[in-house]
Length: 314
Image 1 (cartoon, rainbow, N blue to C red):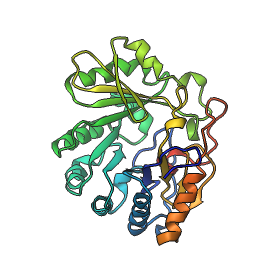
Image 2: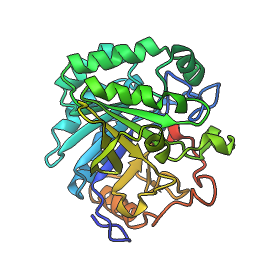
Image 3: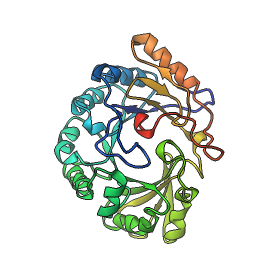
């Protein structure tokens, strides 16, 4: 599928829930979100149906997101169903890692190809402060469980926040010396609870290069500019949606847990997919792709979306 700007769309981020076992300050309100009625979110069958329709239209990669996708009952069975879709080349999942000690091995057995694990700090006190409910030890145990289950070349996603974790940039990069991981620094975006934060919180990804000039650039991968320390086993990625936007190369669409297709994370426009099947579902996805916005406007104003990140599956 090509969108209205001629971009090939082959990547679907599929949110399976807006619930989470954390309350990260940039993502969710302190009280969390109200649990929806069962009928208000997509069933496993609807999620699989949307995935199959998207793959028929040319999607080759699906990433399961949340909220926290591992709190969704039936997540392992969903992975098993999606893995059987003809033409799907890559099935991934982004998680905070806390439930991986129980679920990493079943997920791998079900056919999940790759994991991204969110990790914004390596300091227990800061971790508790940021997540409100989490413990760093749980996330680290999740990383260990993922590797033991056979998930190699993990990606650790770190939201770069001025005044919170910018003094840990070197510590994160040092993880790549002895681990084949990609530590990815993601620019904080002005949306949801953090939209009104002080401007000093919103750092450019280039801050990482200024702090660690020994990094050497290597080939890019997707939206990430990539670097490596000399002799390191792993790599460093910079994802800069604000200061180096990649809208012209964006190849993704998103479907929210309540069945809305979003062509852009930051757009207000959504297309309903619930209740549609077969050709009608394909046509709705096709039209949503054709209406994908050319770009966001984060350098000019806060995100246009009225949803928080947990409600989209960023």
